[in-house]
Length: 230
Ligand code: 6GU
Image (cartoon, rainbow, N blue to C red; front, top):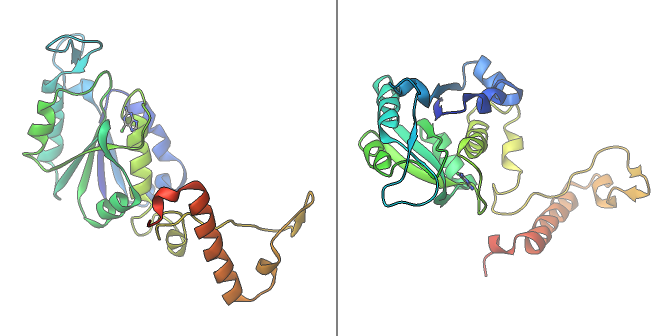
């Protein structure tokens, strides 16, 4: 899977070299390329922002460097592109979106804005080159799209076959079946006065499965009732 990132802070993405995603890159399963937006400027100061028309606080990212960056990426794309612009004003990213993007065969391009955002015309222009998603990772505010893009890259990347060693671990986890994950325990069976639930030591697979399902429903009701049908 091909993923490009455009940012004024390429160093945020250095962590893509570690852990499972790093191994997937080394193995050629994920091809992630990070671009510095300032490389697409032409003035001495490598300017990427300017004051907002209509006034107001903060600065807005200028459209010209973005246009050049998106053109350069589109010019050497071999698959249909989905441009993802992380934005607290976007639709909320979900496991369903991660699944859909991972399965689509699309080339993902993350456009990370800073300041008060990107000139709105960039999104219209991007839509002439591919699909466009403005996507938030939750109802809180970050300083820019980089951390949100990292979260989405990890969520999508781990669904690409071969990135996660044991595909079964992808099935039994929070959100895949619409419920939170059941609690997990390992040895020792007794630790600092806390015991592993007897049912898990019983060797009775049917009872274990029933107990785990009850736990999933119970914690979803307690922690995330919004996920349950009314
Ligand atoms: Cl995608 N960007 C920013 N700046 N803040 C956020 C976000 C994204 N998602 C939640 N908060």
